[in-house]
Image 1 (cartoon, rainbow, N blue to C red):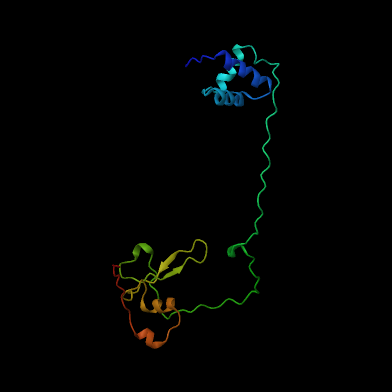
Image 2 (cartoon, rainbow, N blue to C red):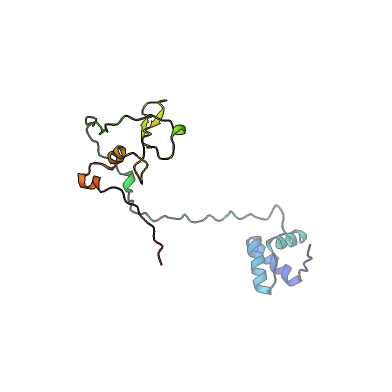
Length: 172
C-alpha cells in the first residue's frame, strides 16, 4: 500500500471542497487539477476520515439523475415475409402426374449405385418410404420416366436431346 503524504495545503483544500458539498470523487479531481497531484476518491475518503471530517453527520447529496434519453421515432417498414397473406378459396386437389412404371419399392439400405432414387410413400404417419429402384438415366438420380416427371412437361425434341454434362472451368 502506497503512503500518501497530504500537505497542509492539500488537506485545507479537501476540507473546503467537502464543506461546499462536493463529492469525494469531484473533490479528488479538483485537488489533482489544482496541485498537479494524483489522489484517488478513496484517498480523499481516507484523508477525510483521518481528519475527522467524514462522519455520519456529513450531508449526503442525492445521486444525480440522468436525463431521459429520447429515441428518435422511425417509420416502420414491415418486411415482405411478415405482411399479411391474402386468403384464397379452397380449390379442388389437383391429381398429380404419374408415370406408367412399376416401381421396385426398395428401401434405402437396399438401393445400389445406379438405382433410381425417386421416393414413394411417407405421406401418412409411420408409412415407410421406398424408392423406385429402376436403372438411373445417365447424369441424374432418377430413371428416365421419373427424370421427365420431375422436370415438368417438355416437348419431344427436348426429351430426345439426351443428357449433357457440365464442366467447371477455373476463373483466371
